[in-house]
Image (tube, rainbow, N blue to C red):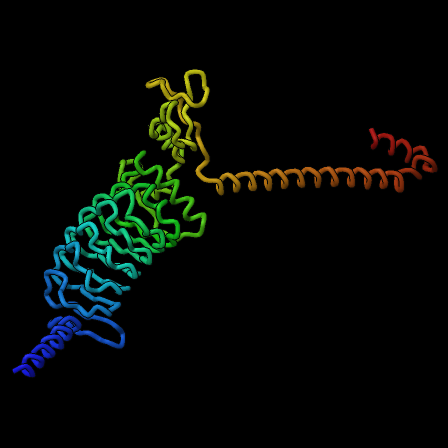
Length: 348
């Protein structure tokens, strides 16, 4: 009897271990590549009992509609997670926080409307985040702690009208960012984004650009080609200057566009309707440099032409004088009276 009990105990432990490390019934697990293939299986939630050693989880083309907070607790070694083409409309805070080794997260072609602050916290190795082809209307000011290693961000094909500059600045290693096919409102709310994008491209970043959808006069135009003069009032609508008792540093936009007091002195932004217009700025530094270079070239060409004309005139005068001296001089000295009279009449 005792032996039978021991056998049952061993069998139960073995069965439990096998169950814990087995592959879900509808999935195909490949031990060599550490991949769980669960795509096109009709799942409505993240499947349970996934092997804890897997590094690639393919869940695309299912009917998953939400991601719970502890959905990936059993798979802490994931590096690539593909949740594309599902019906996900919300992502719980901390849903991915156990995935400290995650490098690629694909959430494209879902029904996500917004992303909360710190949704992707505790993903220190995340490099690619694809949020394209959703219905996102706003993004947070930060994706979360430890997301500074993201190199690729795609938010194309959404419903974004603006994007916070502080979010983009929190991604210092960004190399590629995709913005196209969003209803971008090219007003003061996107001015900070324009400044960031110019700096990003100057540093060698890659982007598909931002095409304005509104207001009407800017519809269809590239944001980078909208002159600074059209954003002149945006400087005066920047965040208010902190009180004198505050020791906070002003934001980069406040430093770039200082307000002026009643007598033109910086630091006083208190006049409501009488604030002076912002000083026009060149469209870009490269355009200004190109203008200076072209002007210099034109001036140089004009100067060379004037010098050539002067040299030509001097040479012509010298040749004429030499001709008169060599051919007409003897006539004046040795010619007959009739020739001298003819010479003098020709000179007259």
